[in-house]
Each structure stands twice: as C-alpha cells, then as structure tokens.
Length: 209
Image 1 (spheres, rainbow, N blue to C red):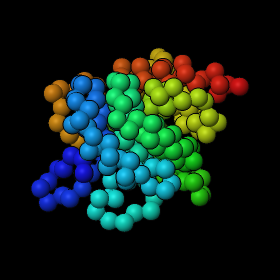
Image 2 (cartoon, rainbow, N blue to C red; image 1 turned 90 degrees about the horizontal axis):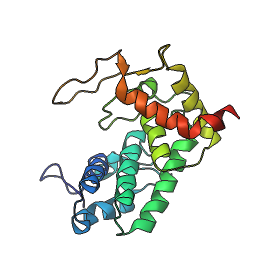
Image 3 (cartoon, helix red, strand yellow; image 1 turned 180 degrees about the horizontal axis):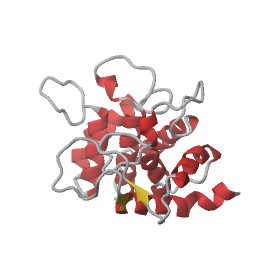
Image 4 (cartoon, one colour; image 1 turned 120 degrees about the vertical axis):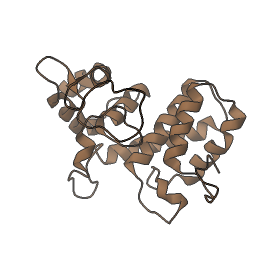
C-alpha cells in the first residue's frame, strides 16, 4: 500500500508516505489518489500510538520519532485542506501519535528520562525526514494542541537557544539537494526564528505559569 520507492517493495515506507501526504494534500491531489496512503497509515500504526518506517521490512514494537512526526505533519495537512476520507480515524490516530511524543517529553526516554539522541535538540531547516524538538513543537502549535506540561522541557531548551539579538540559529544541516543555500549552519535563521516565535506565541504564557 501507499507510495512505493522500488518495484521490489511490497509496502510503502511510512516516512516517505507521511511526507508525500503532506505535500500532495497541500497541492490539492485528488482524495482518490491519496486513499491507499491513508489506508496504510491507519493499518501500520503501532500499539504505542506512533509509527515506524521499519514496519514494512521487519517486525517492530516501538515507534520512531522520525516516522511519527512525518506522519503527523501529513495528517495535519490532509485535515486542513478539507479531505474527508477516513478523517475521523486519522484524527484519532494523530491524537495517539502526539501522546506518544508527549510520553517522551519530545526528546527523552520514557523509561530512563535520558535524552534519546542529542541531535533531537539541534535546530535544523529544512528538516527533511529527521526529527527535532522544534519540528515537533511546530506540529503541536499548528494542530492547535493545548499546552501540556510535558512540552515544558522542550520549550525550555528552545528558549535557551534564543540568541542575544532575539533570533534562533540553524544548528544542523541534513544532506540532500537544494536549489540554493538559504542559511549557513551556525548563523541566525529566519525560518527557525519564525517557527520558534509561532511556538512561543502559542505556549510561552502557559510555560511561565
């Protein structure tokens, strides 16, 4: 099901399909063309609420932050552009996937509380398929999700990354083709500053209380 990267694939990669849904819904693809992607996403959700792109190649028990955020962004774009096919099950799945991220406080092990991967704390743009806390916070903000205390750790990290001039940097670049380089790694980032300000407008008041 879904978009296949190779003729040898029997099932689409969930990261790819989440990102494809994001772009296709934004550009107004027909609902009929998106149906197989929706079916696959709902079929492949894991018991912990999230998603894992390895589920099309092997048996997995734990979701991936990378895959989960890609799928969440796809579902969000699908919803805001007025699609209706299996929308209610999708919204339920999205709520469960956000809960999966919250159980990890967006970057911590749900068992030990330790940081899962320090790269999750690095601000990048474009994110491509990779997860980071700003990407996750942007999704919560865009989805209109209410403040949850489990967002607090990630918001505190984001606040500490604000530079003296009020901007946020781009701290990491992920490989891949681009038409041009908009911002150099380590420099002030217009994109990350805009994204951070949107997040803080939504949640900073709750964080202070």
